[in-house]
Length: 217
Image (cartoon, rainbow, N blue to C red; front, side, top):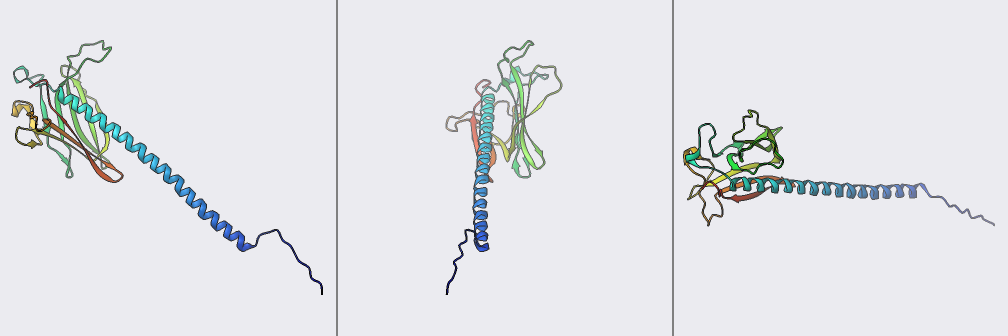
């Protein structure tokens, strides 16, 4: 009896199905890893930008507080020199308002007069259930009636300004009432404390800055 052997170079249906399943698993793994890396890169980039923005904001406030100007005898009714902190909150989250007169060098290349004393205000605004820190600035002696409200920091969780009164930290201050700037004590490390809270990877993180007015003491 003779027989024949049939030689086939093809694949069976089962082999094809197994190959397709393995290819699908490998593709899903590569797909997930690739987009996971992209998401991680975006989070890192966003976090770095938020940290940069936060650092610049705290440094700006530190310099402005350090240059805060207040002389009770030199204040006039029309152009009062002030340092005011209002204790406010937004659904339980600190949302202080800080208004101060601060010395500022004239901008380079200005063609019009500038007094060198600016009235600066920081306040928190809520929009679409998100908080942002806004900043206003104008020359104290400017005749301009319109003050532009600039976005200073987007998507913060809270903004808290505290002043040292010589014995404890308080959340409100008004030179019209206190008749002076917050008290400077070496052991405290500063007389004005600013705390900004932001969210990083779903967790609240606080950053604090200390400063002391050194001009109008």
